[in-house]
Structures are given as structure tokens and as C-alpha cells.
Image (tube, rainbow, N blue to C red):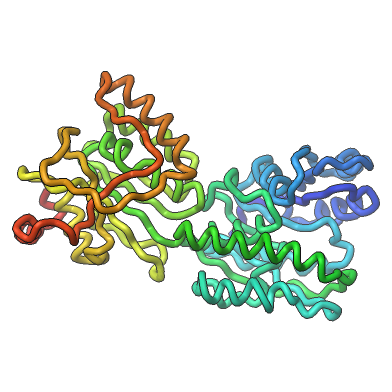
Length: 406
């Protein structure tokens, strides 16, 4: 794989080393550009970096994650290598092992290094145990906390990366949740200056909080929506979908009418998030989870008395992949009117998706002449398991017809 690579180097007051770093990087034939992020330096770091051949961008907001997010946004290539400003301690020729490890399906290559003076307490005592418990699909990594890595940003919404010390881990978790492979290569040995326990304590709190947040957000759970039209999605579950997309989780929306004005509103709402897809309902039978180890939660319209292609598609998928307990029913039918018999028994918080849903609802209101429901902090659903027995039996008989025949 020969796609060009941008190298992003966050730097704060690195005037004494940044020229050497940039010179080393620009001499590597696989480096297309070097972007130095000046994180509010006051020692001329940016000017020195530019004279050495880098492109500099400024980020005045404190926080390591803010700096790399700005750098990733400024990079002109999808493949981005993130490196630190102390490269004089590395054999930079070994960095070529990271581009060499790229392959179809690989979204991130971690650079694993060793320090004879550091037994890696953060990795051994926190990061690795947390990954083993919360994200076991990444347990093959020996240096998951490495801040030296190469990734393909087309897999993730890089503008949503957390602004803290946990940013490097956030990139890795997002790539993993998106369904890409995360691999690792050895890049040598270095000797860092000794760090005191206070340094590790501060980092540990931030990193552990991030792991817990991403686990609570269920970023590896894939959301699938079957709907007759985009209005159903915007009204009923866009807040949940937008929140999951912002945090890096995969979202799939299958629509029976994929070309109307409401669809364009929905598409604009989810467009910033590479893990969100809008597809024709006819393609629902081809759905496969992006990660075989992930769970799938399915949203579909509450089954009305008349024939409903979306619920039939949902039931077909439930037969193949999803447990009935993971099917949630939306309260509006294909005519956007309330469905008799709907009884909400699940409420999901909209949270980080609230602003996206509100904006979409406002646009929907302008084309529906007042028919759009107001947006609230929660979205309401009924579990498939709670349907009356006669209705469930009726649905079981309907799902004998394949999705391709709808």
C-alpha cells in the first residue's frame, strides 16, 4: 500500500528539538508532509519548524487531544502518523515498519517500543487490564498505550476525538469500533527520563475515565435501523444514532424511500461520521456486523395492521443475526401517525446527539408543515418481546417472505 502519509507532531515549547525532528522526518521518502501543531508555544517553535520544512498550525486551547485533533484536521492525507517531538531518542529508520504493515482492512498500526528504564506501569496495571475486560478484541496488543502510530482517518470522525491525555487511546478505540483491524509492529528501544508517580496518577484518572465512558456508550454495539422513510428515523431515533456516531460506534440506516427531502436532511445530519451509513431497504438482507464480536441492536417501526416492509426486513434480520430482546420498536407508522397499541417500555438518552437531532427536526418541520414532533432529551421505544402474543404470532407468519421479495 503506497497511499501518501502525513506526519503530525504536537509540540509545546520545543524550540530546542523541533528543527532536528522535522529534518529527520522530511528526509524519509515515505513522508509526504510534516504538520507541527504549535500548542500555544512562546519560544518560537512554529517558526523554527517552518524553516526546517514543516507546515505549522496553531492550537491555543490546552489539552493534548486538542492539539492532535487540530493536526489531524489540517493533514492533507487520510493516512496520518502521529509522533512525539522527542524523536532524537529513536532510530527513525524503524518507523518505516508502520507503513509497511498497512494492508486491506487495517485501520491503525501501533508502534511498540521498549524502555529499559521504564517497566510501563500505566500499560501493565491499567491500560492492558482495562482493554482485556472492556475491549477484548484489542487484547493482542503488547503496547496499546503507545503514542506512536499510523492510522487511516477515513474510518473515524477525527473532529470528535477527546481533548485529553486519552486522545491516543480514543483514536484506537474508534478505529476498532468502526470494524478496522488494529495491528502492531516493533519500532525499537528508547530511554525516557524518569517520571514521578504524580505523572502516572494524573494520567491514570483521565485514561480510566475514558475507558469507562466508552464502555458505557457501548461503542462496539452496532445500531441498525429499518424504516419506510427518513422521517421515521429523524422523529424517533436520530438522537441515539447521532450520539453513537459521535463516539465512534457503527450505525446502519436502511430506508424504503431513500431519495426524498427528509432523506437529504438525515444524510446531512450523519454525513460527518464515517461509521454511519444510509442504504436502501432492499439491501438489508446483506447486512453483516462490522465486528464479529460486537452486539447488534435493531430499531424498526411498530408493526401496524397493514403490510410493513421495514418490520418484515427487521424480522428477517432478527432471524439471522439478532436476538428478539435486541429489537426496539419505534412509535410511528409509515403514515407518521400514532400506532394503536404502542406501549413504550424503554427510554434511551439522546445526550451528545441532542443538538444534531434538534437541527434535523427543525429542517423537517419546514417541509412537513408542522407535523414534526418536538425533540426531547430521550427517545421512547417498545421492546419486541413485550408485544401481545397474537401480534407476535402474526409477525412470525409474515417473515417467511424474504427481504428481496418485498
